Length: 253
Image 1 (tube, helix red, strand yellow):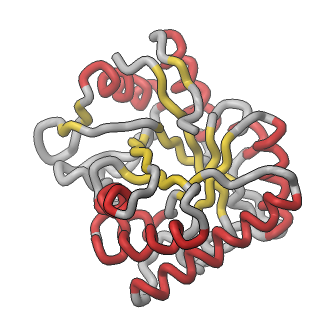
Image 2 (cartoon, one colour; image 1 turned 180 degrees about the vertical axis):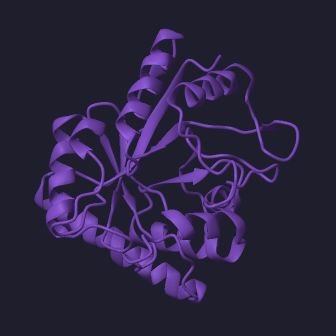
């Protein structure tokens, strides 16, 4: 069994007076935080609050850029040229980096959000553009990518430090892509079921899929989404089950 793995969550997704998730509780459980940068969610005050909480809890921070689509929570593909996507990603990373500098902390990695993340997984040209933007900002920024997909390939091609992730609460297709939201099997809502699947994966390196035999994936990190009503329960159960199985939960950076 894999003996050490990171646990990450998508956080900082509130906006103005509209709260999303329980970041304070999640930051006491996870070891890295993908912080929304004002595209699909968040605003400067939310980003600052999330950065402060992450620093207090010793949680590593990553930028979580997505489409500028708060109405759709970044889960709709917005038609854009790859170079335009790169510029959008760069602007959002820069916004979070600027606020991190004010808080005397740093952004260590980048993980694209939602529809952008899925597009980066499937489209090599978009993946290359996103990695180029990340590398242009700072070669020290790592990339957190869906295991086995195009963003991972692009990051390695361009010499970026890349870490692969799997999802605790999302279903998989035999292609290695996530089951699209809205389809049967897209989400796992039961914390015990999610934990059992992860422990099986850590034992074998094989991930169950909805349309075939289990597939081999590499992973340095496990993602638990932070916006669901049972997100904290899911994260807490997974961390407890991993620890009970002798798996050290620690940041990948």
